Length: 339
Image 1 (cartoon, rainbow, N blue to C red):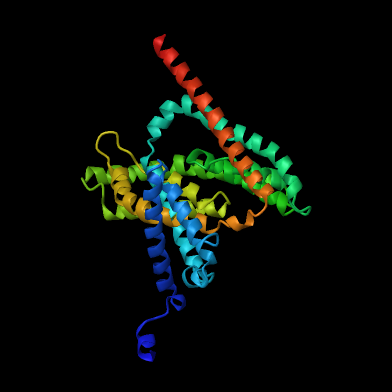
Image 2: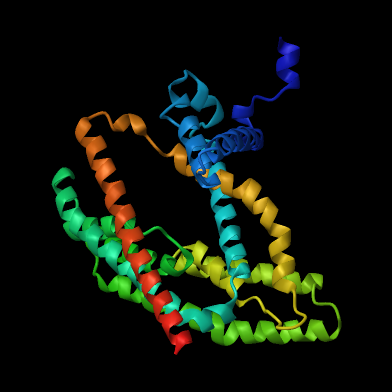
C-alpha cells in the first residue's frame, strides 16, 4: 500500500489534479442533464445549472466525503476563477458576433424594447422588495435592499449589463453607509470607457486592420495578439471601475474591425473560440452557479411560497412588457413600410 501511495498523488493535495477532477465530473454530468432536459425542450444552460445543484450541497453534498473530496473549499477557488474567465471569453464572443451596423440601423426598434426590459422589471422589483423587507434582519439597509431586489428582476443581457452594475454600485454604497453619488461616478466612468473604446481605440484598431489587409495578411499573429490584449485590458478596466469584466469583454469584441467586403478577422476569432467556450467554459460557469444553491434552506412552506412568487413576478415583469413593446415597434415598422 505504501508503494501505491507513493506512485499516485492524492488529488485533494494537488490543486491541478483537484481542478481537473472537478472539470471532468462537471462536463460529464452537465452533458447528461443537458441531454435529458433537451427532451422537454429546455436549453443547455438549465441542464448545466441542474448539474451544479446535484453536485452541490443540495444533493451529493449529503453524501459523506463527496464535497470534501471533489469540491473542497481549498480547491474550489480555482474552479470558480476559470469559470469566470470562460464567461469573459463568452461575452467577447457575443461582441464579435454582434454587427454594429445592424445596431445603428435598428436602434429605433431595439432601444424601446431595451428600456422597457429594464425600467418595468426594476420598478416592479423595487415595489416587491417592500414586501420582502419585512423578512430580512433589521440591520440591513432598506435602500440597498430595494435596489438589490430591483436588480434581481433583470435577466442580464449585453445591453442591460452596465445598468445592472451601476445599480449594484449604488446599492453597495448604501449598504456600506457611503454616498449614493458613488453610483453616478461609476456611470460616468462607464460612459468614459465606452467613448474611449469607440472614439479612440476602434479607429486605431481599424487603421492597423487596413494595414494588414493591404498586405493580404489580415490574420497576422501580431494583430491577433493585439485583439486579445484589447480583450484583457478592456476587461481589467471595467472590473476596476466596478462595472464588471464581462462588460469590458463585450465592448472589446464589439470594436474588433469589420470590413464590409473582405475583412473577416472578427469571424476568424469567433469561429476559433466558439466551440471551446460553448462546450467547455460555459458548463463550468453555470455549474458553478448551481454549486452555490442550497435547496435545503427552503425548509419552511413560507420560503417556497416566497420563492415561487419571486420567480413569477420576475418572469412576468420581463416577458409581458417586452412582448408588448416588441409587437408595438414591429407594427409601427410594418405600418411605415405600407405607407
